[in-house]
Image 1: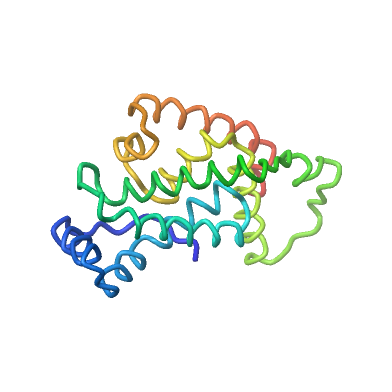
Image 2: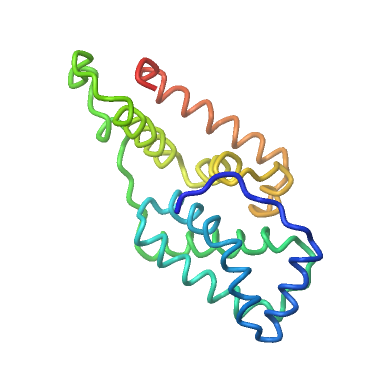
Length: 194
């Protein structure tokens, strides 16, 4: 279910779907769900770090979207509105359950535990690489993790991220720079396998 870079849809098509969904057209709401479910799941998965938890949040978010559609005024894009709902729900979930933090060193082990003599096949290396990168992103603070996911997984622009996070584009750029600097510092010792 993990997808990257979103597909742009014409605004008029989306407006028609929203209007039809408001009239309780199940097919229109399903089309909106299909269009945004992977994006919401990605955000929840990277924010919360657990697939089942992300699935739960996905369902909660779309229940809120369904209930909130009558009040949606098209002042922001639909995607921004849905991302905002998803982000708020992720934050609510973390507050209720308490955030789980696992240091990157505990996941990757020390340099003494790494055995360069054992070379797995290319597919295994690719899986490990993705796992290491995902864990490095997950080890970022929620604010930094959020901008990384919205930028590099979802492909949003700085302005779109700023709308979702309700901050200035300059703040988005600053957080992204800090996140990338932290990732570079954490992943630098692993560059030979990444």
